[in-house]
Length: 136
Image (cartoon, rainbow, N blue to C red; front, side, top):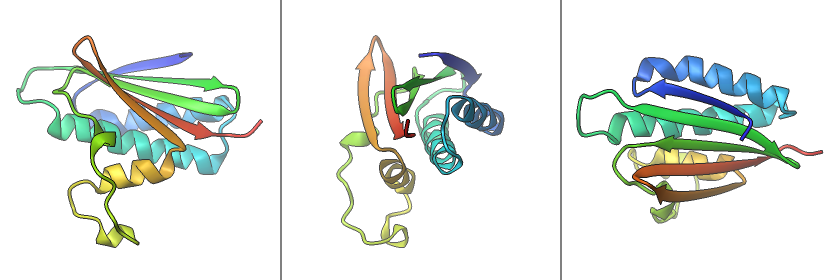
């Protein structure tokens, strides 16, 4: 991965993190519409980690990496929160976001905005990798 940033597990860090990610994505050739998808997915994933992933009040770090691989922007989010694979949740059978249950809407949005996603638990850390097609 080419570009990396670490933030503490505080919601106040989301806006600067998202601004950084969108700037880097644009530098890597990501079209504006896809930058919006990157922003959406990053906000949903990181806010879920901060809100639901930690069972203590201790400081933790969340790492975000961005890179271009051929015609894709690759975003990896790594945290030391409790194990949680957002991709293992069953896809809800809905026809619109309004039908999605309140809990889990962010995951529905991430699945629709990213072109591919993968999750792994490695050495006590969650790793969520999202891929976005960005053309030539």
